[in-house]
Image 1 (cartoon, helix red, strand yellow):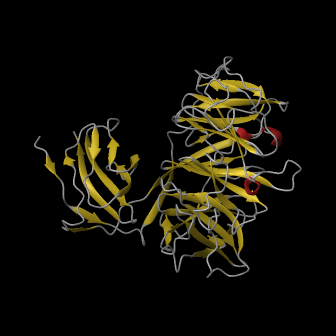
Image 2 (cartoon, helix red, strand yellow):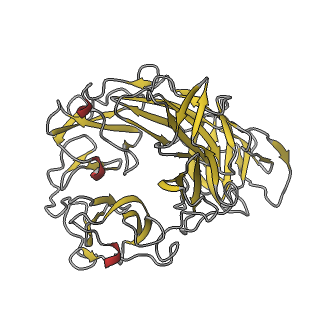
Image 3 (cartoon, rainbow, N blue to C red):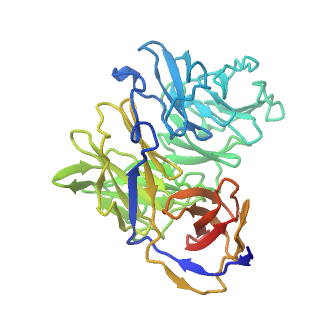
Amino acid sequence: MKKTFTFLVLAFSIANAQITITKDTSFGNNGTVSGLGSSSPNDWLLLIPRIHSTFQGNKIFVSYHADNSSFTQFTRLNTDGSPDTTFGTNGNVVIPVFEAYYFYANNDFFYTTGNQKYLSTGQEDTGFSNVDMQNTDWNYKIVFPDGKIFFRGDNAFSKFLPSGNPDTSYGTNGSVNTDASVAGDPSGNSHYEFFFNKDQAVYEFISPSAGLSNIRKVSVATGNLDASYGQGGYAQVRNLVLPVSAAYATSVRTALADGSFINKFTGSNNLYFTKTDGQGMLDQTVGGSGVITTDKSFLYNGTSYSAQDTEPLVYNDVILVPAETYSQDLGIACYSLNGGNLTVNNSTFYPLPGTSYTTLRFMFVQDNFLYVMHDNNISRYIIQKPVLSVKERTDQKDAIRFENPFNEQLILLSDADIREVEILDESGKIVLTGKGSKLNTSSLLKGNYLIRIISASGKGTVKKGIKN
């Protein structure tokens, strides 16, 4: 087949588009994995994915108390929701009780409380020895790309080698003392929580806050605030056009690689969302004058759903707003970053059938899946963002070019920086995502695809491509 370079740019807008959310019937039993843990409230799922990671590759970690005891049972599920019997004993590993806050996983291993390290098989790594990596109330750990372990203590940062020994090349004998502005208080008067890490910095929630917000950026190298971030090291989250009575609720990181995040505020009748960019400053281009205003409650077939106490989710350039009824049934609304209410399955609000709960509910987005934890069940939905209002135009200055058909790698050539790429199959399902101008496409089957490209400025284009 003759190869050409594609120049045609398809411009698109999702201002009036719809989002499709459908049950993933390939997951569990008709979209739900049931019976995890037991019916006791003390045994329901513990692992909270927002903290670090609940995935090991495409496999899913869940945890719960074992038999209502002081031990915790880990189960790892395959991507279809079936138990991964290669993990531990018949898919289960039992460890001493732990807090999900201290959990960290990557493709090769996972850490639990204190100095315990487990291999991807579920077996404890007995060669790992670290008596210093203990936990007080708010300590956390992360692993950098070089395999070194970063440990956040109240008054110092420490680095350890993959073996668990101190990394003596870091600070003094493996530790760097923090300055007073980022120190914790073991007596409980102040504390910090992990938000995310990027490059050689960690982003933390701090309470109470000494800055303009509860989110700060701390340098791993120095243990000090990064004063170039936001205003004096603290992120801007509150826009001046927000009502004075609007109370800050939470922040959630976007899927973009720039370190931006969405902030939620609650008012008497409305919810408000702002966006903080990667430099810690408010993004004034979202919504109206930098604020997206939404309803605080939604009506569906006469039933009211409240979003007062739910945490927003971010899927690409869409904010998903979960809400629930008084009887604890769940549903979702969607908004674009320009502030428009996107329809969900042809409705401004969509109930999620079969996700009622008694005690526990938690939602999160991974790739193009929406996961809903409800009591001791996990349901999975497929999120699709159709390309609507597409019109062709030939603008050579802005054209994005690539070899078409492409093979094992898609290389995009453009005068503008490329932020994100999504490849969709002919049904509109996202099958591959990536950052930047190069994407490994070896996992794709031969066939026709749509390639959605987001530039660094946020401009979206769609092109047709063929995998050879």
